Length: 213
Image 1 (cartoon, rainbow, N blue to C red):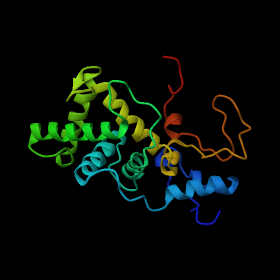
Image 2: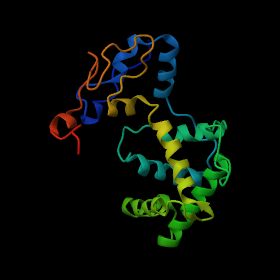
Image 3: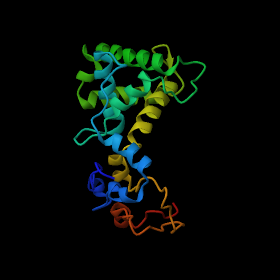
Image 4: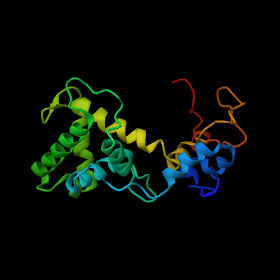
């Protein structure tokens, strides 16, 4: 498993001392190679134009609340998918194909930002960006710049979450130990932990966690 670091983070504070990469010795070579590739330098941006890249980076950081380093390189991962035309294999009938939908929605995002503050979305402050995005989310099925707002929101969040939660830094944040193959799991059941898993300290601090409400 050479090349895989022994740890990535502290579990975001919720899983003290936990690191998904500490389990690398239990993965087969093919699995380790896939994970290792995600930890290397992110791929160069090939799909987005510079203006689209700036808007998309700010958008993805806001959607995922990635404001500080280390960050999962979600922008680069989304760009790589779009450049390779690796979609989910479908798109809504009332939306363009994903690549075209990303370009159209990012242009609309910049247009709306300019109408509010005479600058592109990436140059708005975080509070302005948040309000603008919340406004789009609140539209639900209404049209937004000629696109269904809920479909645009689905496009952005699907790509953002797929990229983010494929990365070991995100695994540490949610206490996920990474691929189970070939070791598997033996302690099956609600609230059952494997020896290598760490309990969520936030849940332990909340006596109502898991209780019926």
